[in-house]
Structures are given as C-alpha cells and as structure tokens.
Length: 316
Image (tube, rainbow, N blue to C red):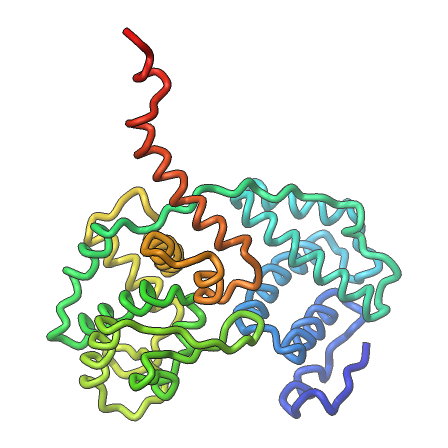
C-alpha cells in the first residue's frame, strides 16, 4: 500500500520508514496513519490503536503475523478470549474495530476478502441510561469551593458539562479563545471533525469567569491543573470520580459521559425538542437523542403508575 506523499507531512512519512507492510503490525501502522490523513478524531484513532494492538499481539502470540494468514477461526478465538475478561459492549467495540481494519485492507488491495465476512457478534441490548439526579449535581457542587482555584475550576467544569452536554474530548480541547462571552457561546470541534457552537447560560458564564480570573499563566487551553499544565482526559475523569465518591453518589456511574446524558434529559424535561437536543449534543442522527428521551418516558411511567396501576384500581 502506497500513500500519496502530498497528503502527509515529513513526520508522518518518517513514521513509515522501516515498516514491513507484509506483516499485520506493519499494516496496522499504515492504517492508523491513514485514519489521521482522513482526519478522524484523535480519540477515534487512539481507540483503534488500543484495540487493534491487543489483537495484533494476540495473533503474534499464536505465530500468525501475515494478514493473508489470518482466518475467521483466529478472530473467533480472540473474541472468545475477550469474553472472559470484558463486558459485551467492549467485545462488540473490539469486533467493530477489527472489522474496520480488515475492510480497509480489502479496500487497499492487501487482501482479496476479509476474514470477518462470516463473523457476526450481536450488539448488546441498549440499557436505560441513568443520568444524575439534581440532588447529585447539588451535592457535587457543594464540594467545589470556588474561592479556591481547584474548586472554581471543578465547578466550572461541572456546569459546562451539564449546560452543554459536551463529550469529554470536546471539553478537554476547548481553548480560551473559543469562549465568546459576548454571544454566550463556546466553539467546539466535535466528532468527525465537525465544528459547532454551544450556548452557555448565565450561571455557567459566571463560574467560567470566576475561574478564568484566577488564571494568569498564558496557557491557551481552557482547563489547567493546579500546577498550570493542560488538564487531560484522565485528569477530568479522576476529578469527577473522586468528587462522586466524596459526595456518596451511588446507583449512577459518576463519569463525564453521565453529565452528557444528564444535559440531554434535563433539556428535554425543560421543554427542548428532539431536534434541538440532537443539535446541542452534535448527534448525526436522532437515535441517541431518542434513547435519552426513553429514559424520561420510563421514569415518568413509573411515577404515573401510582395513578393508573391496574391492580390498585381493581374494585374491592
């Protein structure tokens, strides 16, 4: 497989030197470079990298290193091994990554046919998404002392998550110049390199301004650590997890993505339409938005059951 050198920079060209493209590992390196050239999000590329490296390592362990020698049997053995240690959704995500990798090799002419063609892994059933309750949000915010730097930052992070429904990657990559207080918006780069703007309300703006007034470091990114280094995905994950533990939150996964669920469900409860929430969250289709709406419908049905219970309404 030969890439058009006009589409890649010198660093990327250098990364191809010494790569044996006859091996599965060599093909993986070129595949990941191809993903970058196609401008897939860094998070997607990283996800492919992590999942496919585990697969390549497995194949190497059973002494199968050439793409042409991989059979459906080898892939089924790998997926079976994953089932021993991973949840069904994780297994399915690995299956999708491997399928994309082999389809790419077919497209590039490395393989005539994908060994994945006859393999089917059932998608795990959708579960009702459990968002934060407003009591949870209140308890988290009570732990954020905004008279101090970390408290002010953490409060601004929580309110920005809840007000916008941003993905973790979108939130991490915001720069100070992307925040427009005059128009009450933040410009974000979403999934699939799609740029969009999200609005921030008055309370979120106030929290952001309070946090930014404590900044005097010249760093362009919006979120920094106490040592004035860029705050990473992992840093935000840990911060939210620790706050959730201190707040005693149980029954709900305390994670950045739960804020996204909560933003969607609260927006719907507050009167937003499905299309509006779809645009807010940067969804390409209504599928996920409808899943959030299903959460509300399920909760409302439980509450309403007190009124229309078939058994409770039986005549005495």
